[in-house]
Amino acid sequence: MIKNYTSSVPIERTIMRIEQALTKAGACGILKDYQQARLMAISFRVQLPTGRMVSVRLPANADAVYATLRQAIKRPRPGTLAKLREQSDRTAWKLMQDWVEVQLSLIEMQQVEFLQVFLPYVWDGQQTYYQALKEQNFLALPESTEVAPV
Image 1 (spheres, rainbow, N blue to C red):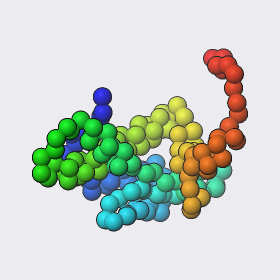
Image 2 (image 1 turned 90 degrees about the horizontal axis):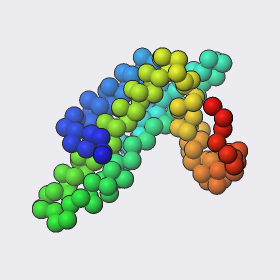
Image 3 (image 1 turned 135 degrees about the vertical axis):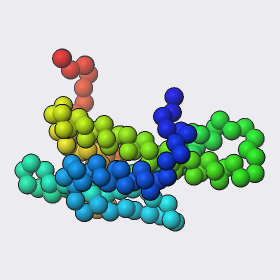
Image 4 (image 1 turned 180 degrees about the vertical axis):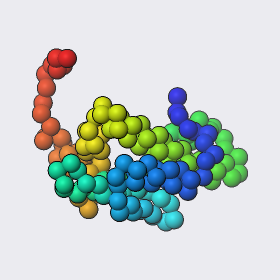
């Protein structure tokens, strides 16, 4: 089941809510990355408990949402695909809002630390930490042969 696939909430309102949640959690320097008038990512800086500032980049992959939703449409009517593109943008950002709010709630309830959930999105100005790991075939990750004990 795809959550928020019928969201009618304007992207601007969703982005405002994401920004409010992030600033309440201590984010500063929020930046929005647009490509061809489409919002691709939100970046922000946050100070870690050590005092170090890190940048985080949260992308929303609306193209992947579009591809998934497009599979359900066998014979689109005129204009349907353009509407589907807009819906994909709304859905992708609404999913990101939900994810951010859940992660920040876990942090606030001391279930996790900031870097436990945001580490893949830490941004060095060129790529995220996850992208860097992927580029190196995840060789920096420890290899395991068994499930860790609880």
